[in-house]
Length: 362
Image (cartoon, rainbow, N blue to C red):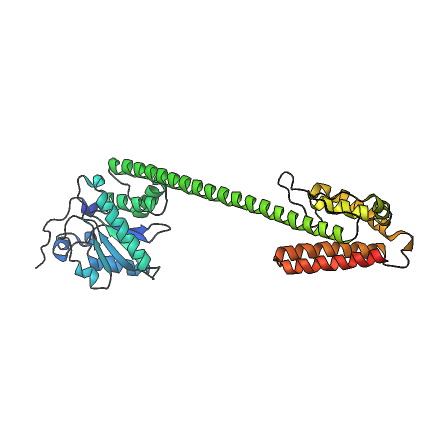
């Protein structure tokens, strides 16, 4: 047989039995129901049993999914009155004295609420919380949950609880403890955000460093390949350059006039620009020039085409056609280089050699 309390708690009858739902939460607070033997000692309008609790909720169109009992006894009512209706029941024994020093009570309450909300699929099922009068211990633990788990400020949590319950938290030590808990919670969040921000900053700098190195290496590789292609094309076209033992190609005076007349001097200038190293980490574009040299290079290219065409422009291709062909050829160099298929590069070298060779024969 379950032992029951024989005395009604002091001042218990002075408080309203049931409050409202705390806004933006599923909490509803009430004072502890009492068994029928104690209830019969009170006037009819002062009675509050588990049956009265469910009746009042049904009148509001509400229902409970879990009840958390914070009293330090089990004598006020039988928990089977709750569990018999398929409502989850949790007991967190909270003593009346030294309660705010019991961090284990806070952890047990927070964990019980969190576990239930994670598993419960019925979003309309309320979480009923009660202590003896439904004010001090209920207010403290619910506000701690709102502060630590939902990120509320202490003022927001206290105001929301007191407006929903209809009574203020009576013990000043509980209120001071809530403000202290909110300050500690903010400090932890700031430290956590600072650590996360520092880690994100380090990762960003690391990615940027690797990205800069990759861009420089890629630009150097592009420069080297384009320079090699330019040298090969210039050597095959019969430009008058001869290899020397030290790798330097001095110009042939006999061919200099022929190059100048047909525009080969302009071609050599363009390829020598392609073979220049990257300055200040700025990679060249598809034409081999940096962005600052683009306008000057286009002027040179236009003049080069004019010189190559000469007086026989009506017999061959137009100026714009040759300009487009040259641009397409340079774009093809870039595409082949990006694919890394060096057999295609060799084929393009041979094609350039054949083209310039036939032009030289003519």
